[in-house]
Each structure stands twice: as structure tokens, then as C-alpha cells.
Length: 479
Image 1: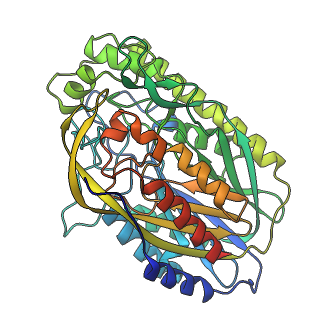
Image 2: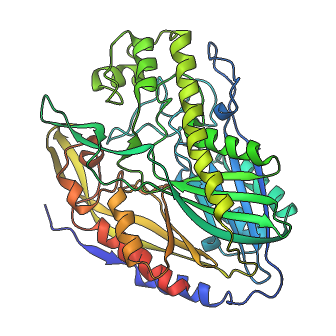
């Protein structure tokens, strides 16, 4: 295997910096913000439980910002991911709509493993969906080349509604903490092999960040929330759900009342699961008749057959299903209460924030897995084409939203925060398209024989430095 290498796209960076320089640093009029949400819940499949819980519904949420000289848009989708074609089309149309550079548009997925916009029978990550290499839930099937992604129209609709709602505003940044998440790269105490399970000693960022937008009268307009935890509670459940991100957003929105819009973005959650998964595994066990330990998300002998449809799934016990729904609601409430606390305590607000965006690509050596264990043993690989990862930096006042179009391990986010010239640095993952990398482990974690690491299409020794240094350079250029 050839040695890993780092190639920084200097030309792309130069173009991004030039774009930043051309935007201007001083707003010429009052800062304004507007927000909106558009529902994208697909039709229910026959036999699905009734949608009696708000958090089962899926939304596109958007915030549009305007400081007089520059505009930006923050968009989140209750989806497992936003495919590359959907991002490319949506960002182009939104940029034209707002007359702003694509670099000023941040589109990300909440990463729910139980939602899509394709309709019954095509549920991403649900029963009957195939999994790509690496074991991640399958994305919704890509639309035909002649057909636009079903995500583009509601994204544009949400942006237009948010733009129409623009009003004089101010913005503030705050942080809190939540202990709902846990590192999921663990050693099985019996087999001594790597598994997906709770590792309380592994690196885990508990930070909850909130970018708050409110009117000059103090009425909340929007909140942009970031936390690192996989929404896998309803994975393979057989029903559509926005999982805990949707429950959190709904809880906070209802606490303040409409028209507050609460957007959830994923932090560096590549190796972060909910600490407690028993409610979800109980439902999978109820659907299959196979007992599953509560400390493990899903056993391969159950996940594979249930996912690919080779073993018919039966209707789960109603009490078990309702228990999972209550648990998702509970997680959303706990996280939501921390968001409300942070919003309440965020009192330093900026009425004239600068808005600047930049993007670049970094390139690392690639690999293809040819054999070996999916998990619990070493993989076998051959060299493959280099892999490109898209990075972005969107500065809003004293805060930078640093984006990566992949699932990144927690330690990479920590390294970025240590290197970043801005103290209010937030890593947003699964953002602005989808890299062909699979999971992106930090250098130290490449020795873990988990499905995330074994399925990564990156050779070790490049991505952590490429991402941390690349984003740090973008942030420096964007100040």
C-alpha cells in the first residue's frame, strides 16, 4: 500500500479567499434574520403506526441572514444525508435566489436513520434498504439524471419563506453540555473484539452549541443547534421518524411558540452513539424474535437479514413500539431543555455581524476493501483513487461554522477547535454534499477494527491533519 499523502487544493483556497475579500467586512445596514420550515414527511407505508408524535415528521428548516452587504443561508434536512447532486442543485438555486456566493450557504442533514422523502418501500436505512460498504445505512436511491432531487424544491421553498420573513435581528453564541452521547468504538468484554457499543472511556464531546437569532424586541426567531450523536434510536424500526433531533426541535419550538424555528446540525458524530439504546434494540428484537443485548445497537445476524429483507419483519409489540417513541421524546426533551437554558443565558448579542464564507477541497490517498472482517478483525485493502473531501467555513460575527461533507470522528473536531483562530468554532458534519470517503476516523482510531474504520475508503495518516489544517486555514482567511 502506498503511503498516505496530503494534497491541499491551493487554487481552490485562493478562489475562496478572493471571494471572501470581495464581500466586504462592514455591514451597511441593520442585520436581519428570517426563518421557516417546510414538511417533507413521506406517505406512510401500509401497517405503519399512526403519526401521533410530532417528532416523527420530517422537515427542511432554514434561516436566511442579511447584513446589508452579504447574505447567507443555514439549511438542515431531517434526512440520513444530503446527496451530492441534491446539494449541488440546491446550493446553486439558493445562491441565485439570494444573490450570494455558494460559499455562504450551509446545507446539512440531521442524520436521522429512519427518514427519507422517497415514500413507502424506499426507506433509507429501514427494512428492505441495502447497506453500502462500511455498514452505514443506505441512502435513498439517487434520482435519475433527468429528475431533480426531491430535496431541492422544499429547500428552495424554505429559503424563500425565510427570506420573506426577514426582520431586524441580533445574534448570540452560547454553549452547554449534554451527557446523552457516548463513544461507540468498544471492545467486547467476552470476545475481546471490536464492536459497536458504549465506551465510556473513549473520546466524546459533550458540548451543545447554540447560535441564537432574535428580534430587536427579544423575541426568538431561530436557533441553530449543534451536537454530536447518531440518531439511531428508530433504526430498522419500520416507521418514519426524525428521531431525537426532531423531538428536540419540536420541544424548543413549542416552548417558545411559533414562529421560532430550531435547526439541528450534527457535530463530529462518526463514533458517537446514544448512551442508552435498549428501547431501540428491544423494538428490533420484537420485530425479529431474536434477543439483542441492550448495550449493542444491532447484531450482524439480525441487522443484515432485516435490512435486506431476507427475513420478513413482523409487527412489533405495541408496548415496545410506544416505549421507543417515548424514549425518543425523552431524549429530545432533555437535549431541548439544555438548548433552552443556553438560549436564556446567551445575553451578549451582535446587531451588526460580518458574514463571510469560503470553501475548499482536500485530497487524501484512497483504498478499497477487498476482504476481511466487517467488524472485529482486520480488513484487507488495495490502493484506490484519491478521495476528495469538501471543507467550508461560514463566519457569522464571532462564530464560525466549519463544515465537512462526511462523518468525522470526535477527536478531529477537538483538534480543529485547538487550532482554530476563532474561539467560537463549531464543526458541522454531513454538510454541503457527500464525500466518497465513508467514515473519517482520527489517526489514533484507525487501529480500531470497527465497521466504521474497516469500511473507511481513506488510507490512514492523512485526513485528520488535512481537515484540521484545511479548516484552520479557511477560518484564518475568512476573519
